[in-house]
Image 1 (tube, rainbow, N blue to C red):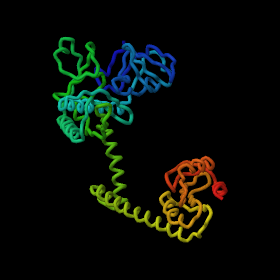
Image 2 (spheres, one colour):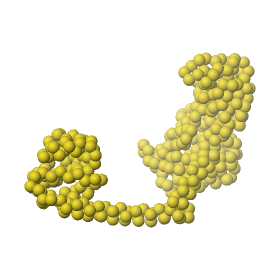
Image 3 (tube, rainbow, N blue to C red):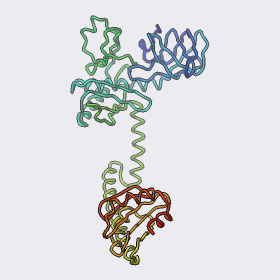
Image 4 (cartoon, rainbow, N blue to C red):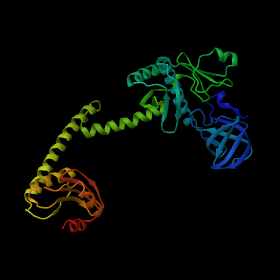
Length: 379
């Protein structure tokens, strides 16, 4: 059994331990120490990293009470100086403790249980077994940050079976032995194996980012502490850029963007109607014909091709075929004054590697062939 120093003190940054064994494995070497401050991947939290001697630790896991450290190179057997990446560890302690606070408040306010938790390198997400609204989560977030500002002391302990039976606490698993309780004042009491900060004030800001309905419950994304600062910096940088682009104060960017989008919609609508009018004018300039006519138009949308065909087909005795694009990728609209095309288009598509269709006297779609083949077919 490995002596677990992270239970004694979550703030241990470096320690000396005896390297008991080194075994080659996938990904490097499996190192077992007599004691360790490296927290293994467990309970939704990723493992600590750091060094054992000069060997970097990339992954840590526990099996049957023994903590295994995966290193890239093999440290010598004997006493080694070990160091964890405490910046990474502290960030995880901030996040995990913040998750306890949020889940404890959700449980007290709405009676919901935490049924999933993942603390990864990028995102922090947890699930509760019921639906919550943004207003309800805003209330949870406000109470959570008040708990941070109150700088509550956090207790961690292993109660005996008698004490455990008298405690009220949250737990994902039905365990009765070696239960470690993390108690945050009156805010939360939860069974958990992970390291946590000593006082809530060390967490810093807690921010709920996004949420969504998930399997009958709610999935919630959150940040805290250093990650909250990093998240704020990224978003502040974005809002600065948007503010500059819109020539609007930062706090007015949403209104400015809404106005910009309305103006842009108006411009797009005007442009669309103008291009349709241009297509109709182009059609009027075309000569009358008693045969099939194939017209290639540059950079025309389907709507514009349709406008062109509608304006021209009355002066064409055969099929009016309008295409736009390049060899191997043409949009098409085909119309007739008196022929039902819904069946005929199947043969046309088969011959010209086409896709599409329609009803009545007009069909549309795309041809994956060249202009020469299209003109030859309809000639």
